[in-house]
Image 1 (tube, rainbow, N blue to C red):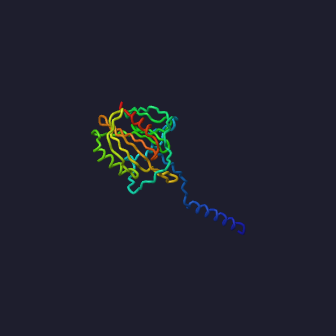
Image 2: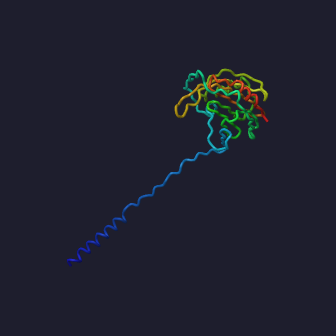
Image 3: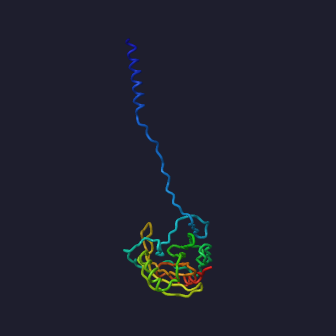
Amino acid sequence: MFKVIPLLIVVSMISSTALLGGCGTKSSPTVSTPPNITSTSNITSTPNNSSTTQQSQTAVETGSSTEKPVTSEKPVTPEKNPTGDIPDSQAFVTYTSPTGGYDLVAPEGWGRTIKDRDVIFQDKLNGVQVAVTKESAQPTVASVGNNQVVELKKTGRAISIKSVKKVDLAGGSAVLITYESNSTPDPVTSRQVRLENSRYLFYKNGELATLTLWAPLGADNVDQWNKMSASFKWR
């Protein structure tokens, strides 16, 4: 009897341990969360004439209607010697939009972003954009003042309108809006610069092409801007 008792105790302890283990809660396995995926269909970008890649489009300098209102923003002080002059030796290439139905010359080597019928060419704080929308009637100086200018002031950054007038170009007549605006804040430094903008509204058969050119205020780009605006034509 002296030797049996310890054996029973050992068996009892083993059984108790097994029962307690069976009543425990099983831990759930760790499940990793997949990264977010942002769709960028129909958006292509070709920086400096390299191969086409997909990326999101940003064209906030132009004060387009896709921006959120910035009603409280104040004009920043213009730089005394702003960088942004397009050199006289700059080469230009013709861009043809197969879906937008227009041609335009743009600086060779600038980054290019295409979305459907729209295109943007950018180099640092310089930019050229064409956006095509539906329009029921030919814009006039009066209608642009009552519509596009009002929308521009509402959605742009510290917009200051300088003039609204009709102009006759090689590609046809257009309404030209000249204005100043703030650039989008730098994502790292939050720095902004004051920009000058020229926005041409070309109309044909229910289509409105808005050609916008922008650069730091004070940059000398008159000849190059005239060259690009005069090159626009419907096909």
